[in-house]
Each structure stands twice: as C-alpha cells, then as structure tokens.
Length: 318
Image 1 (cartoon, helix red, strand yellow):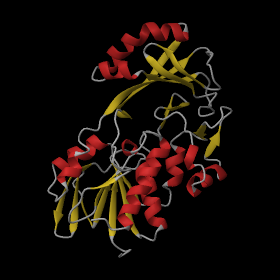
Image 2 (cartoon, rainbow, N blue to C red):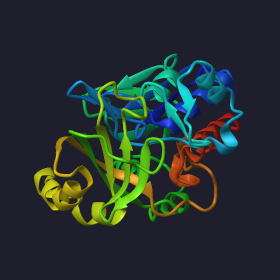
Image 3 (cartoon, rainbow, N blue to C red):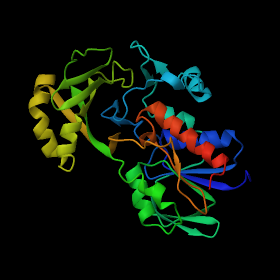
Image 4 (cartoon, helix red, strand yellow):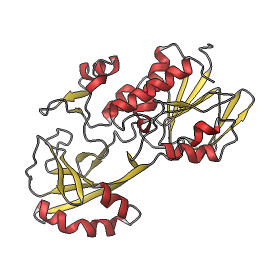
C-alpha cells in the first residue's frame, strides 16, 4: 500500500478521530479531517454561558472493553479523562469536549467545512464544500451521522455497491433536546452529580458544578426524554420551554433561568447495522462509513467502528 496516498475523513466525532489515529499509527501520512462545526468531538460537547459551563451532549463515559487502548490510557495519564465517585463513570476534566480536543491535537482538522457532495474522476475523489473549496483525495471515510452521509452520497457522482449502501438506509436516530439552566438553589440528585429520569419529560439531569465542569454553582444540564424530543423537536425553543415549565417549576421550585437550549437531530441510534462494525461501499475508490450506529451506540462502540474502518482501509478492501 502507498502510505503517501491521501484520505479524507468527514466528521470529527470520536469515530472519525480514532479512524485517523489508527491510520496514522499504521504509517499513513496524508490524513485530513473535515467537520461542519466550529469544534471537534460531535456529541462530546461543552458550552460556556454566563460565566459557567455546561456539558450539553454526552454526559459521561463508561470505558468497559476500551480501557486498555493506549489512547484511553493517555487520556487518563494526562488527567483529561477522570473517574468519578460513581464506579466506571468517567468524565472530561474540563468538560467532555476536552477529550476530542486532546485526541485530535496532532491531527489535521479543518473546521467549518460542510461537505455538499463528492465526485469520482478515475482514481480520485473530488470533495465539494459549502464554502466553495474543492479538495482532491484518493479515498474518503464518512464518520458523520448516517443520515447526513446518505444525503451527501445521494447528491454525489460515485460508483458504489448499491446493495451495501441500501443496507444502511433504514438506520435511524432519535433526536434530543437539551436545556441549560441556572438555578438559584442547589437541588438534590440521586448520584454524585446526576439523576436519571427525574420527571416525565426529562431523562437526565446533571449538575455541572458538582461534576467540576463549571466553576459557577447551580448550573444544570437537562436532557429531554426521547418521547418528548421526538414529538416536539421541530417546535421553536420558546414553545418547548413553555411546555416544560410545569416540570421545571417543580424541579427547581420556580427559581431558575433557562440560559440556553440545544437540539441534536441525531442523538441516539434507534437501530443498528447488523452485519459489520463499519462499511466500505466504494467500487473504484475506498468510500468508507463508520460510527456508533454500526456498533452499540456508545463511546466504546464508536471507537471500535473507527478502528474497524481504518483496518478495512489498510487491507485495501476496494
């Protein structure tokens, strides 16, 4: 294999980052990641607000069968990833976004690059971005949410295995709605810093101060239930907040302020690809697909899928 060939990875979530790290470890020199956002990490996301800080995507991690990976060991050794008082529950020391930032620090990452389509021209792939730039690459890996990847490929001029590609069309995510709230008073939670299913319309509440993410007290992240998020995802935030007010009034004794909202259109996989941990659909060039929807929907599964697609590339399964 020619280790100088270029490979582009779309999406800088944990699957894309681990695909890049694994390829780099195997000797590839020309790896570039692209993400449509202003930051890296996907749902490993942290936001500042009113002098405080919130994790507003994944709230914690369980390492299980990935604990011995050298990258995980490095995160722990460098105090980026730390275990809480709840057994096998880990968090990012300065917010969950600190994890992908550390892992990607030596990778080539282009942010605010939204891919529109790709075109094949003999043995090359042309990547067309919304900002007007065009990048030529030998191969491509999609680690973005599967629905976004499908939309891009449907607009593209590529020679792919349609049987394989059709096998991912039925994969779906449920959306998520997140609230970031400052309370006048501290509230009691079941665990060190979080509580699951605190009310009918919320599936999770986290205290970012007790979590040591926020230096300001009483900063809470509330994740709406899947049922509520599905029913109300397309509504405006003001209407959503009004609908949630009765439960919020009870939780916070009417002494709170909603500082920010966030929507994740692709929050939790509903179903999973049953046949493999990743997929190469290219017939002429390598066109890979990976992500947590190919495994089990969690952090470890996303990592496993990223490593899987990197191994397929190294074996040149075209």
